[in-house]
Length: 182
Image (cartoon, rainbow, N blue to C red; front, side, top):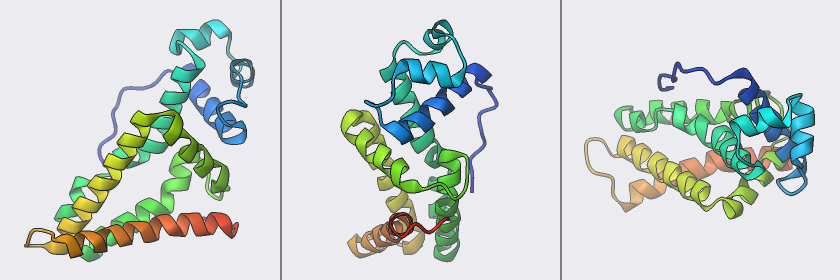
């Protein structure tokens, strides 16, 4: 249930910087990742870095938005409301099953450091926190609409939708805690 992707290509150097930065932010956090380390590991000059990003913080913001929000932005959240409850739940299960790979580019990644980076980013980037909250509100609203057809969702149905999303999120967390690959 993916949306159509934007056909505009991102320059390969920019992509390389973003990918390298994400890996380093996962491993070392924002504070532990120096600009020199990003430039060195991505194999670009500082001039190339500054061509694409005014600062490390700007790179951080874009990296966090790209890798954490983009998988949800590609998913047709509003389309959930049009599906039967069974199909909506299946679409969300499939989406959540692929989240780790969508975010990190590999399956089986230890999600602990990835989740730590995400939660740290809520504090550092209030707009990211707000966007993430809006995405989850939309997921709950549209899943509740699927559950409530043809009626308008009431508080009980919204709570049921929230519990289903929480179950999917909890599975990611529990797999991480128990070190169970995706």
